[in-house]
Every structure is written in structure tokens, then in C-alpha cells.
Length: 300
Ligand code: GLU
Image (cartoon, rainbow, N blue to C red; front, side, top):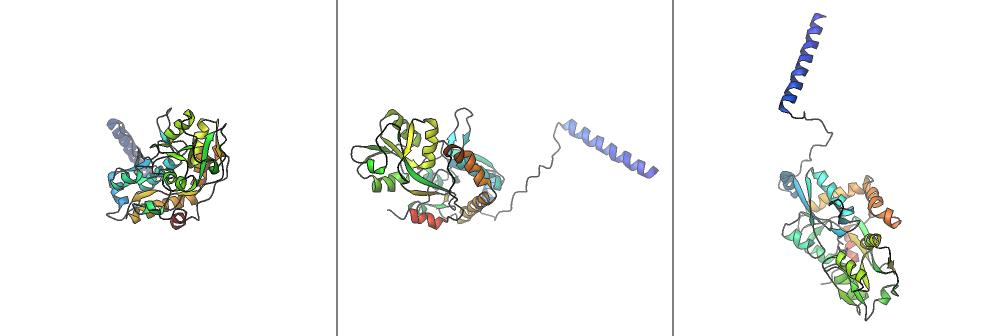
């Protein structure tokens, strides 16, 4: 009995000393957050390098509401692509640093190491695959047309001679879609979609042509506009990594597989897209990168 009391006292005394120690140093005792230990990545892999640096730099759009948008109120960059970039950073156990990557510089940014990864409304195409590597497809977008609500333009057949159409420089619409489907229209190609949208609002162009989800974001900003016509394309989005880094592309694909399986994809769809468009999602689970190449075979 005496023995037990002595032990209880000793334990209580040790606890007091531990508390005093913590208070004296002004430091929080480390608590178990339940976070998983960072996974062990192969030495020399991009994943191991990023873990070592404690940070991943991801190129996203800053002017595309719903996918990658710098919110002027909060100053935060947000959207579907941004949340996926965050998930990759979380799986690596590193901080996420974002960098604006527009359609025209996202591939050069991967090539010169400005960014480690790109999530920038980027369609997987055979031509781009010659310069970078792609993850599995994670979103299936469709090409559409945005016009002022009071226009006569009802579809691509109305984008003929005398009409002016805007899309972003180096997008699939500049390089493939508009030359094939609206060869008579005059095409304007500023760097960004927000510039196209500003030109459409000013009346300096007749239509803005790009992916439906990009147009849906602009429609939220100006409901006097309308999305018209049938689907022009199927644009499967992928994440981009440096050419030849198959190991990292496979890692990103495995994160996207998980996102699709664990319900996160549906949550992100509802949060960023479904609540605005009211449309049912197209499930990209069964899409492979090879399927995506068939949508955009070699042009050059
Ligand atoms: N998804 C298309 C592309 O990658 C259009 C959107 C964009 O320019 O980012 O070209």
C-alpha cells in the first residue's frame, strides 16, 4: 500500500516537473496530430526531392473562376485545379506554393523548372506530350461558345467570315479547334481568358470560345451572357510534369486515382462546378491518357 502511494506521488511529481518545464520554455508540448508519417519515396525521385525541400510549386490559372482564380476579396487562389494541387502537396507532406501559369507559358515553366507541376485547365494532347508528360485524365471538359445574350450567334456555323472570336494563345482552340471548325472567322488570341472576357463585354469580339467550365465561371460574373451551340470538342484535362519524369507522373496519377475513389472528386465537383451549372458530372474514372490522345492526335 505504502509502495503504491510512493509511486503515485512520484508520477504526480514528474508530471508537475514536466508541466513546469513546458511552461518555462514557453513551448507547446508536441501533440500527436494523427497525421501520417511522410511516405518513403525512392531516393533520387522528384517526390523525394520535393519532400527534402519541403515544398512543391504548382502552376495554376489565376483568372479562371471555378478552376484557378485569385479571389480579389480574400487574395487566395482557389478552384478545382487548386484543390487538386493541394491534395498532391498533402500526399507528399509538403507546403504548396502556387504560381500563375497561363496557357502559353505552362509548358515552358515545366521545362525550365519554374514549376514542378501544372494544374491549369490543360488538355492532354499528343502534341503537348512530345514536350511534357501527363498524369491520367481527371476532368472531361467540352468546347463551347460564350456570346452576349442579345446576339444572333447560335452555334459554330455562325462563326463565319466577318465574325471575331477570342480564345487564349496556345490553347487547343487556337491551335486545333477554331482553324478546323471556324476557318473563316478572325481569331484574336490574347494571353488570358480574362482578357477575352473583357473584350467580349466591351463588344470588341463577337464570341469567346473555350472549355465549358471556363465559360461557366465567366457566366457567373455576367449573367447577360449565354453559352450557345453544341459541344465542339471533348477536352480531357491532365496534370503536367517535366518530360520523361514518368515516376512523378505516375505518383500524381495515383493521387488522382485516390481522389476519384474516395469521394473527393465528387465533393470538388459539387463545390466548384455542379452548384453553378446544375449539370451532372461526366465521370473520368475510366478515361486513360491514351484515350485522351485520340481526341487530340498529332497536328504538327
Ligand atoms: N483546355 C484547353 C487547353 O488546354 C483550353 C483551356 C486552356 O487554354 O487552358 O488548351
